[in-house]
Length: 357
Ligand code: NAD
Image (cartoon, rainbow, N blue to C red):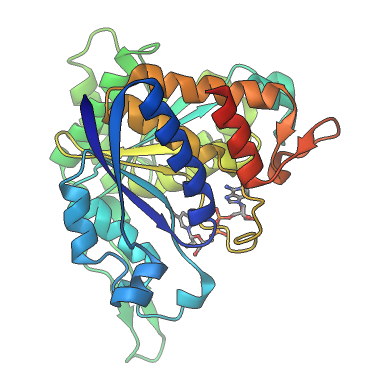
């Protein structure tokens, strides 16, 4: 029997609540599809700081490196915001991405038919949206050096560096090409080449790489226009390729098209080792511990893990179908509440999904 080692990082806030649902889903699927899942839970984020004074302890990173895939819920809480930056939960995320060399972040944005009315955009604008944001994840301004604050001058100053070399741009472009080739072969690369030298290199390199692939239809947009187009006509996009900072912002914007940030999964990948599969949202401290969080983004991340990380496509599709069935029966968590729905708790909607599998 096939056997997979999964490291689960439930993290902080709503993390443990939404993880509970995914653990149950995985257990049910492992029985149905006859594979073994060995789930190792490790400390990560604020909870890891409490236990080990490190948001990404060495033992956690070692377990992740030796796993088949990592399932991560979310980290963070306002109570850690006064810690030195390197001890904050969010720094743990950067450390994990770096340790596993996760240079490619994939965020699918797909409208689920039964949620057409949940978006803040009009139904006719969003009904055909099916796009993927491919974001470079371990370079650019979040990692660039020098960075810091200068406080010994009359005026305080702070600075960061947005830097890419061509090899970093080439490898993320290859990922976008691979994904585009399985879809409509359209890539829109987003940059700010009219102002930033680093974006000019981005644009030139993306063109160099994609010109090797005759079928790929490449377009370029400046990031400000891309933000506008995502709200005006999101269905024009198929694969959006962009850097770390722009991808962070645009993928949250794209997330809201679907109705709730509680619906969106993501995968962070490299070319060889285990990937990290996680919801797009944060730890939602405002609703943590109330059993009202939406566990669907985490369940869809579990589906991405099965499909991309473990090659268990049927089991992955089963989760998607189960979620669609539950939503089409009118069950919703509070974030998706509408007039005709039945609002369920996090664990209750989890049970409904499991019953559909
Ligand atoms: P957030 O995504 O946690 O929450 C934003 C809003 O969306 C909140 O109102 C929250 O209640 C709601 N929300 C989020 N997920 C939901 C879900 N599954 N179901 C229902 N509602 C949901 O973003 P934030 O408030 O800016 O950040 C809170 C903490 O999370 C911060 O410490 C931040 O640094 C951290 N964070 C972590 C990650 C991550 O772990 N990858 C990502 C973003 C933010």
